[in-house]
Image (cartoon, rainbow, N blue to C red; front, side):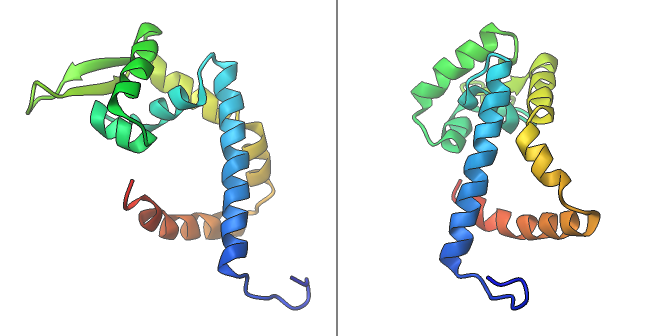
Length: 146
């Protein structure tokens, strides 16, 4: 695309750009997580825990079998980053809850994502607001089957 004549990008160009940004952001996230002794999957679990979440829902979010989630949660629980609690409405269901330490460590992981912060810092206030609005519009369609 030329600087003087803006062209409408194709859907393929948009998909490639989203994939490249997603991959770079994931690498940055994984590197920051590793700095805290977490795998990227363990950090992703912590990032999803904004409240109690059933183990099966975590498996769906992680796109893996529930038996894999058990091992991930065992390791996080062993470090004191999460705890399991019975669901109030169905005691057979185990919810995973982030501890204060777990919430703090994922906050630090996000804070230490230098490449992502650096890229976002290049945007002015108007561009940041526009990007936020566009991503917020895309998010429901991207998460509808998640």
